[in-house]
Length: 86
Image (cartoon, rainbow, N blue to C red; front, side, top):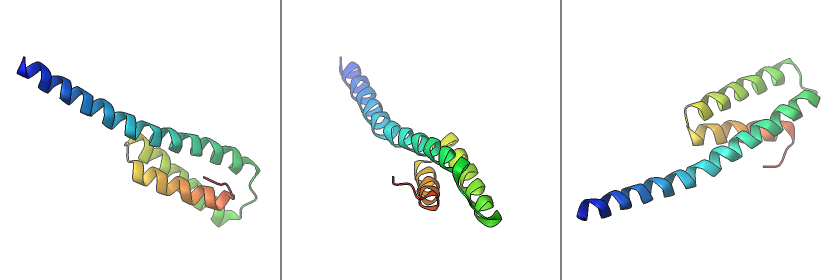
């Protein structure tokens, strides 16, 4: 019986942790979609375009690696470049 309570507590902790992290990554993915749309209409110089592509690559890699901080940092900078509000 004691093991059941420990397992239930552990499962609850894992579920709670995933519920906290999942919305952040959903926001990152949503921001990346907004940025992709904004990039189609953006008029950036060559350096700006290269920087935007680099940041988008970093954001995508961070999202794949489940690195919330790096994804958020990259998308925040991109949104600022595109004139979008987060």
